[in-house]
Length: 162
Picture 1: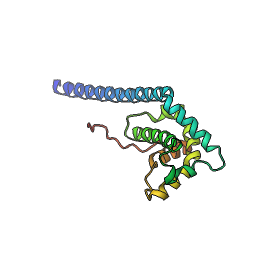
Picture 2: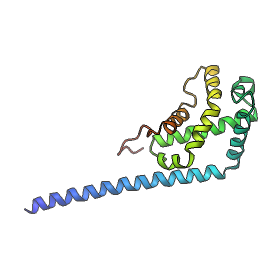
Picture 3: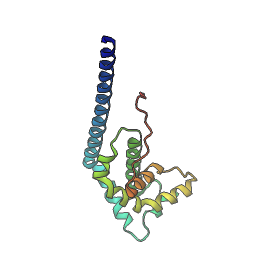
């Protein structure tokens, strides 16, 4: 009888510990996401780059013209890449379980979709010029998740620690 009680108590303790671990992990993911959003919204260089991307996307040539090799070092091309790299980093963070998709989606869903629409031709031109189809692939995938309302694939394992 006492062996059965000890076994059941152990199972309950293990279940509570696992629940606590999962709760703490989810809480940390949401906190990381909020901190990242706040940093992005306060980073003047990112704000300026975002404004530049929007400004350039409204021109008749769009952003694709800035994918040319002779414009690679320009302030405009660097601004575009800064914004796209930021979205790329967020996408990777979401897939690795570092950032929370639902929290980020609530704040940035329309922005991600709009910025991908603005930059899609730039990215495709850059991929063609560099012969590198993986450029900004993560950002493209995140825009797809946002557009389709699907959850991103989870690339982290529950107990993998690195």
